[in-house]
Length: 175
Image (tube, rainbow, N blue to C red; front, side):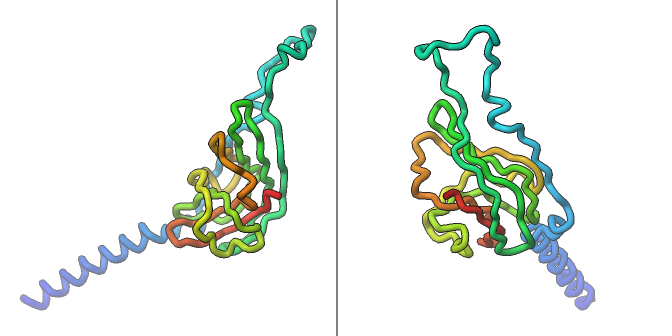
């Protein structure tokens, strides 16, 4: 009778370990893609202007302005990454980082961060980085707000980073 009880305890413990490993590693993300489909920042922020009326200098409105665009990703782990990164300045002084036509590997707990390291030296993030948000999708288009007042001159790259395993998937220069 004792052997059956011991075997049951071992079986339950094994199932618990398996469940914990599945939750931590999320291996299905290797085969399942998450698609993001945020609208382009300019398309949603430009108000329509009457055709006949041009604003005077005093009435001129501020608009969203693209300040950077790049497309050369450096992949570090989990396959190749491609797509564009765009940085827009909003009228309120905030910025939006846009990942467009992104294609990268999926993984657990992926974050979009800004790093003070150049994109070709980000194998490890180091202590000085800014987390923007959780990656909305490993495929598609997504926007991430950078709070007004953030000194973007100190950040040299945008990074897709797996927080759970402290692994850099890919980085792209913001210079």
